Image: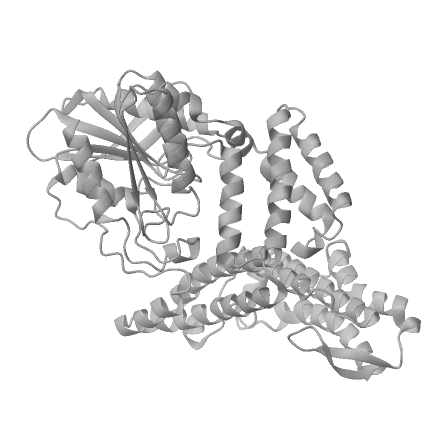
Length: 570
């Protein structure tokens, strides 16, 4: 075995960190120390300092074990992994060092403190290790070692690809839950997702090995916490309309957009619509939780005599460009390129090209339609009609109330967020990061318990706020007020909202539109709200994001009918 001291030094230091910390606090410890805590964070077992000393030695033992694994590996797979195995050792060593040091600190303080910190440490470990799962070669020591993965290399690879995604996703959910929820709720989420990331890969490996259709049902049920897989509205061939995969070019930003163009099988001079996705990187189907709402819309409208162009966001799927550095107004330029493309299609009635935007897409559509004379109408699906800063505060309040948060907690959250929005509005792009940092520091000083209630350190929470809200996309969106575009909109607008939408509230949205219509009587605004629909226009109970994946329906048939009827009557 070649021992590289320079390379091993970080691992050695991590392994001795807990025992070194123990030495530092040893004299301050009583003869009987807490060694175990119950689920409520209360001490339920004491032991001698000798037992504690053994605990401190465990990281050193684990370091030695990982060091010698390549020597006893009969397949020599650990050696073949090279730096990937070293990275796994480093991640594991860091996790063990932080975990054991946290435990020793809790022993010293005679209290576990906030258990959410412990869950965050474990969640971070899941995320970091999950990123390396696909690099782990079949072996007897590391990874998902079931009889079925060890028997078949293809089963090993596919199981670890799935496990990597689950570990990263589960870890992120655990970490985020520690920021949002109290200890009891965070503990429940920790147990649920830990169970999922441990059990699902094991079950999956058996299913993959046996290729049993019956057992696939089992894995579907076991992952049901994420979403249901039954999507009866997803279109299936044969189609009663023509389907073309197309691409078009945004000359201004040098971006190629890839999409799908569907239009009736016979005839010509069809009205046409461009579908504009909501926030976040979306494909042409606006897929979420196995739902494909834009495909469902395109299928319905194309069967009703309306041509539909839908495309992958820039940087997604077959489209080029960088999504992360783009703003809402950049996405608007992609819509302009889509309009120019439709004007080249002989099947289209150039006097009836319209835009259908969902959520953020519902912001973009009026912006473009107000300036572009080629747009004949706009359909807004839960599009934002009020200033984005006001909307984000409304979102936070509605979601916290739905979660059952206390009134005191909601008031604090809204107060903090209101200050963020005000800071963004008055700051320049160059000073925004500095201004947000000053605001958060001062707010934390004025409200010392605010950060601790989120289970975060001040430094981390400040960094989270500054980095999130200073992004070009979010900061420009918060500064944007859609009123001007709506006031300048001369074409018919069909605005649709679900009354159980917790992301874009129907009441405030429609009030803004009615105010504009009253101010400008010539406006051709049609407003329809639907009592039991959520942000995705699914029939729902509460309207929460958690419901989206659990609902089989992708898009309300009633809304599909109303859209097609309205377009065909223009």
